[in-house]
Amino acid sequence: MEPIHTLIVDDEPAARNGIRHLLRTDPDVAVIAECRNGREAVQILRRDGADLVFLDVQMPDLDGFGVVREIGAAQMPVVVFVTAYDQYALRAFEVHALDYLLKPFSDERFHEALNRAKAQVRQGRLKELSDKFADLLEGREEAVPGGAARHLRRLVIKAGGRISLLPVRDVEWLEAEGDYVRLHVGKTSHVIRDTMKALEAQLDPTRFVRIHRSTIVNIERVKEFQPMFKGEYVVVLFDGTELSLSRGYRDHLEAMLGRRI
Image (tube, rainbow, N blue to C red; front, side, top):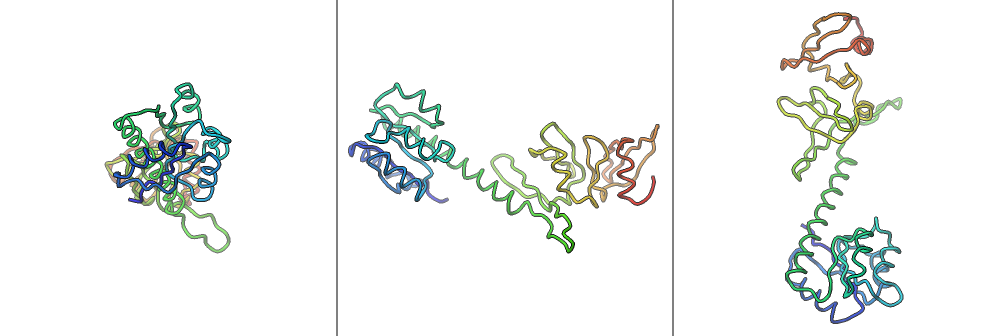
């Protein structure tokens, strides 16, 4: 795994040396720079970026909070504030600092903060990887001549800290659950954060059809339609699953099939 690029920012040489000494035995961490003041920190963060920063609060010219203000809280790496003054703790957490080390601190307290920070960095990297999967591998069909819409080929499934790709053609039916959608694949199911409406717009309409306000079905997995009453039907899948076809979506289904049922 790529090392965690770490920046040490403190106007006291002894403080910088102490943190560097505590970090040097950790194989997961690579100290990319040491800064004597907030201005140097801003320059390094803008030029090189970082995953983690140990940031002193009180420094001349530009203090630790000034660094956060210059970079922007949302763009800052994981921040552990380091200071001899406890009165800044509340303000530190208001700018989303992960931890607040009060000088002098023990080795155990430092490594507790470091382990939390490493976990936070890894979580952020997992999200970034997930976003890349969503952008690059959520895979839409290649556009066809005439400018026809592209459709999803794969769905990104995140569960238990792992990311997997699910071919859309394997989904048998979809079920709305508020702001989530449950994907039914054989005897298993997966929940993704999306609305039925948004997901429906990305699916191939020649394969997937909405049969109920909360249900979309893969037409290739449908075995038969069983009439019920008042124009309603039961849609039976090859695995025996029975779904309701409401009257409001019957015309839509018949248009897709090209015939009445």
